[in-house]
Image 1 (cartoon, rainbow, N blue to C red):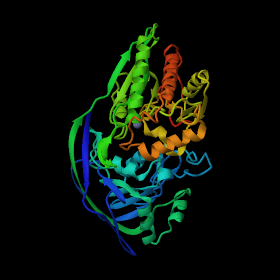
Image 2 (cartoon, helix red, strand yellow):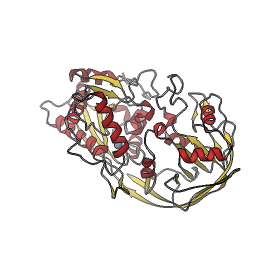
Image 3 (cartoon, rainbow, N blue to C red):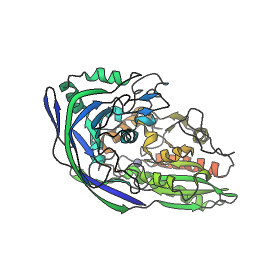
Length: 460
Ligand SMILES: [Zn+2]
């Protein structure tokens, strides 16, 4: 699988001319920008800054944050997430649940259509779902993309600024930040020019590299042309910016845990006395941390036609805290995979709940998303909420500590003190049971009417 690897160097600070003087932002500390175009020098030269709400264009929601604004020669400043964030109304951008348009990658795609110079997304920890250092580690150093995309007309400079820098920018431009956020959440929002001009320079180098998706297939006995597809991403971040003197990003939980659990499930299928009726494929994908690239590539150029895949069961970060009473389903309500998982969870004495932090958009942050986009019903679930022995407060504390200290940091390593394999066994067994159930059935799981997804051609 060919990848283009682009390394962007930020040449000096970002200078913003406002009516109250110049604001100088420091690379990494205050902002991070990069290019997806390829090798070359790119710059913003006194580019007009325009506040464009959440940077969302969605026909379905009758929403266009760029309405009436010619973005040519301008740089958009947008909020992370979507207008429903923090709201109670579940019919307005699904309330607190992050929608498709709230994801940064879609904001990146929308701006490409508009001929703008640049895009800056304002990072705020609760709205993004992760702290600023995740932006620093994910968006500096070599960044990969699929090699065969035509990117020369894309917006040249994209990136992030901290909430503190944004607040300063709005203040110096004579704008009230809270009023701007409220405006951005109001239907009929129109872009607001900031009367500020931004300059920054970058230089990028690129090279083409190769990585591999790895697949193993166990042929079915009765219906070998129908497949269950297990996935887990095998990559992590690699070597990056040192934190506390450690530059190796181990990725023990994210995602050696998922990779090894899928391998264990493969072994269970392969050594079962009776072979399943349907075929079962085990796919370990690459470059997930670079933007779900391995699964995107696979879904675009599948070795098994997408309409022969009954369901995708994805694992990314398997619960290391010990056995749980719950099974939390990310994207619950989307498909009948929920019902099958709930039935198997019940047999383990567990109850099923929706993900507890829907504002973080986890459904869009792992590989099942690329299969859902192709219309394949998915399962992305695990115990997270209610620890069997130590309760809910312990489970929450465990997760919060992981996100704050270990997620996408060198500290994501195996910890014999803290890790308890009971939860991985429990979730691994559940994933096997769901797959076993489907592999010996002729049912095709279906999307539910309110999901954003659907099979292109309905089977049965
Ligand atoms: Zn992951």
